[in-house]
Structure formats: C-alpha cells, structure tokens
Image 1 (cartoon, rainbow, N blue to C red):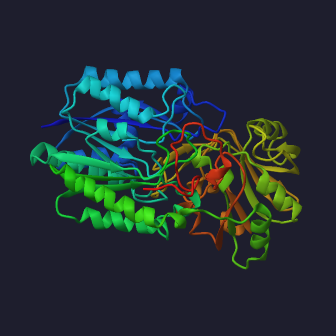
Image 2: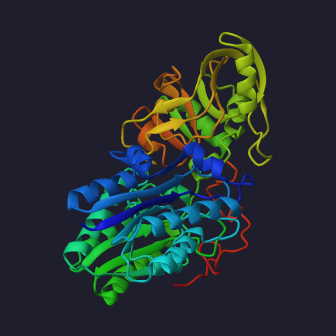
Length: 493
C-alpha cells in the first residue's frame, strides 16, 4: 500500500494590514499534528478531510503529518514562518519515506521574509524529497500562483466555488488523482498561464457572470481527452507580491504541450473579457439609502472594505456610522472589540453601557462610534457549523462575546477574536435571530452568501474603504508586476 503524507499550511495574508501573524494565531485557529490532525479533519468539509476520504477510497495509506491554519490577517512573521515550515519539513523527513504527498496550501500566503511563501515552502520541500516524488497541492480560489509553485509541484488543483463550498471535493479529487499515479501509471504534466489580469473581488461570485464564464471554461477543458485537471485562480490583490493576479492551470497525462494549449485557451478567453472584471459598487450612503427603501427585509450590506475573510480588522465603523446618520433602526453589526467586551462583562447581563465601539486597529476603517444600550448576552463565543460553508472549518471560536441592544433596536455584537462571517451560527448561538432584523451588516463580499442568502431579502455590496477595498487602484503596490490590467489599461497578453 502506497504511503501518502498529508500536510496543510493555509493562510491568506493581507500585506496592507499592519498586524503581523504569529504562531499564536495558528494555534488559536488550528495547529494539529499526527492523529490529532486526523481527528480534527476527518469527515470535515475541508480539503484535508477530502484528502483523507480520497485516500481511503482509493486504497492509499494516508499519513497525517501536520496542519497549520490561521484566520486571514497580516503577513506572517519570519520567525513564525520558519518555525512552521521547518517543523513540516522535519515531519516529512522523519516519518518518511513516502510514495507521494498531498498538501493543502492557500496560495496567497506571504511572509515578511518570503513574499512567495507557498513557492518557497515547495522549493524547500523539493530540495528534501527530490524532483520525482508526486506532490499534489490544493489551492484556494484566491491564490496568487507563482511559477515557482507550478515548478515545484506535480499538480495544482484550485477550488471552483466562491463561496468555497467544494473544498472537500477538491481534496478528494487530489487524492483520487494520486491513486491513479500510484496504480495506473498516470504521469501528470502541468502548465500555467498568468495573463496580466486582476479581477475585482466584487466580480468573483462564481454562480453569476462574469466569473461564472471562467469556470464554464474550466469544465470545458476538463472534458478534453488527456486532460487530468484544470483550474482557475482569480488572485488576491490585497497581497503586494509579484505574482498577484489571475492564473490558469492545466494538467495532462504525459503531454505537456496539451496542458500548455489548455491553459492558454482559458487565459486568452478571460483576457478577451477583461473589462468585465472591473468592479463598481454603491457608496455607504447610497447603499444604506437603498436598504432603507427596500421592501425586502432583511437587507444584507456587505462591508467590502472590512472583509474579515481577506484579512481586515473586523472593526470598521463606516457602515454603523452611516446607519446612525440616516437614523436607521433594527440593524445588526458585528465588531471585533475586545476592550468593550471587557466593559460589558463588567456591567453584566442587563447592565446599561455607554461605549465608543470599533475602529481600534487603525484610522483606515472609520472612527469609534458612540452607543448606549443594555447588555443582553455574554457568551464564550464558541459555535459549530455542520453545513457546508466557506472555509470548511466547522468549529469556531470568536472569544468572549457580548451582545448589546440599543434604543434604536440595533444589535451590536462585540467579539474578542476576529471570525469571518461564514456561518449564521455565529449569531444564532448568541440568541440573535438575523431574519428578524431589517439590516444585517456583514463583513465580507462573496464568501458569506452561503450562510446569509437563505435569510436575506436583498444583498447589496458596499464600496467601503479599508484594507480590503473593492478597487485595486486604491492600494499602493511596491512588488506587483507591470504592466497589469486594469492598473495599466494598455497591458497586452
């Protein structure tokens, strides 16, 4: 029976956020080894669960080695990167030899010491294992794929769904392909094309145009005779790296020319439609006015500039301040605000509080907003999501959490830890019924749709400022390649 090592190292790094990511951030989310890793991820909706499921299905012996996963945030410190990567390489060395490796990477991981953190990890791995060992890697749909990542892996397979609802499916796909390599003599040959194209985050909902067309092309290429796998990654422009932007990957059975033609075909079709991938959203004032006028309640206002799933601080008050200015009522807002959680604990349940909430990380996400209200709930902040949701995490912990109700019937949820809003259990576990609110401020763009669409009367994406602003032209880049569309309108491919 072939022995397949299983690893996971996933972090989406926002280099515009001045808060670094440390080992403690990984330990808070998920840092597991060996059998503890298997226990955490077996049966999950994550690609690590898909690896384990696919190995069992195809008769491979999966050897769980290590998985380190953290909530998106700033670049990883050099010390944390070295500690994690070195431990992973030791595990491969000490628990080998292996017939292959299955690795879950994000693809938009940045260390302060290594901008292409994923490529550097794979380079070191190859130096350890040699060039022939099959290394099949899954990637987030928002990966910034470097040519080093393609060179040092055997196969790259990216998610096809945003929200990411197919993570386990892609992990299983990777394991089944590994089984074919082990038992059928399949010889993957990989090609990647990286046209100079950035796709606005507001255009990345895979169930609708324009991005739906990209994945229809993936499905078309996947049906070509000889193609083993095809992928599109739409990139992550909150990471200032050379490889920032979209990429197109194809893998063929012992036919590098076929893989190249397939990757180029997908890339050229996307390039021809490049103007469709430029965003354009309503301002906070316009969005709140639309929400107040809408008969379809609740209205979800997606706070694009404070997208927690892309590394934002989760404490922007821009929409809360606009709701107050337009005298809205019955809204729900979640803010990461540990200091004011402490104040609510001091007041106790049913205690009255006067607080200045939010905007504690920096001055890019509004100013603290004054509220008065009653503490309705105090919670440990832990919740479990059993349905397929973006991220595939299942168990979550937003830390000590307080719910404050104001005279305007606003529900202000204050958390200790940042948690992307991927699950309604985040608020249901606190006794909050989101379907009873008129307006729900949700700090995301596309990913929260899987959770909030079932209760939403309407969804409005809002052009708020912040470290996850929709418009890439709002950011000052030092490392990106040039020319790159839409920064340079005359970019050619």
